[in-house]
Length: 243
Image (cartoon, rainbow, N blue to C red; front, side):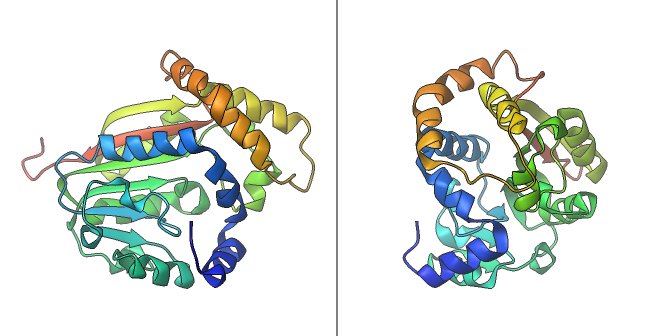
């Protein structure tokens, strides 16, 4: 994923990035996330990865690196992103108003205490007519010590996420839960949860990804409005005519 061990160490220290290393084994799951980002990019000429980390998914948007903005507070990760050719920033406040065609953010809002203020900033930087993709953990019933360990303030229900996005001024185009089997796997994990989180097991993640995730992806279609380990929303900022 990254050659510079100092960058890796810094990112792990500040973001719980050790879990991201384990999730590298989830090849099919990561491929799905890349497909999701690409699917809703449309004809965007600029994109922004909010909470880009070390750029794992930043190149999923079908654009040249110089057309992709990456917002990531970790300074070491910022430098790595810049070396990859992305426009790297520490905060959304550094991005100009109405400048981004497509903003995507994966598993970030749950880390932000005031997610409403973050949504206001997202709205500010997205162009009228621009699109937004949000993907976050679902259901507080699934909240475990691992959530606490990596700095999650919450997990989301579909209705609450829709309200958050709509209150900021976006119009929701699609919303759905995802990873139906992952819901039950996480629920089972919670039964054995303790005050300190057990580390993610790369082998178990790999087995789930290889044998169960394809079935979970199919099951997520009829369960889209009912349950899933995650929830995502696609929304659009109204253009200047209000449509």
